Image (tube, rainbow, N blue to C red; front, side):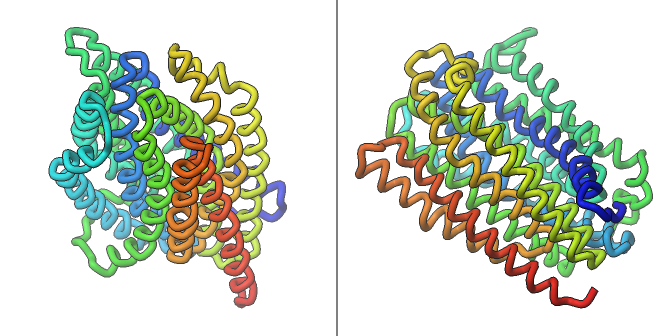
Length: 451
């Protein structure tokens, strides 16, 4: 990527990187979005089952792909330092890690899903749907993790529009397959929630094939030739990837599991409450794609600048990302507050569920600002390859303070089910404050280094 001189140049360059990432993230997210939406049209019990299954699946997927995301800052810094020869080896080591992770998760789902679901107080019909949904999703584990490696490589080269093109194809494919397998069309049986899992798994396979074809045949990817001259597994390079990737994965896991934990704790309430909570969380997650995409762009941009030892430019990109995300957070909050009822009505016709969802949306609007700060700051820190302290901060903010606060408010005050959402606000806000402090400290430290 080229060096930028003015703030205007940096702004346009960031937009060029971030917008395709945003489209990509939305397309990926739409798979889960349409799983929830289309299943809600099939049955409220299947919706609850997919919600529980998704609450188990998303943190696992997010945490483990977070490990693979470690490839992005490593490759970005190598490209910034003009060390292209090392990129191929690191990407190939990422493939080895992806395959191992896929088999480990598959084994865990087969062996542990029944005991885990038995621990959750659910109606039997909901538990069965959740189990079948996860079984079907596991068919797509290998392509999902391999694609994560390819995408990290593609994005690190600044070719985020390529990832966008590949992933954009996934949404319509997934919608068509959902229609076929959830509702039983073209001679296939109606599988409900299990059909949503199968549709997603098959989509992952198709997307991986498309990605391999593009990387194998097109520049600048052919210049690095990641599918040629295969290196043997290297414990040293796998160790480097793990040192960066594992804290990223654990940090993402800590963040996503708090939301999943809240969903599981919500199972103490009625199926209608679970469904309303999941609808609110589902739409809020769509809005989160904006700060998340800015964060991923910040990792790439900051990584390149740090690799080139342009620390001042890295600092500018860091705070430019935060300012942009904060600006959009006010728009997101307005959408949630003004259009609460129409949005809820998209998901369900059940009046009681709509009423509950509208109430949850109010609290969702409150943590938009915290998301807008903590996500891009986290992304910038990954660009600096500063990930371990970030993970520790996430654990403290979300699990030691945020979730216990929510539990106390939900079980010992009149807030009841909404107490968990207040706990989320507390955890996210504290996380944002501590991460900003860490970024400021790191940038001051690097500013003293000779260029």
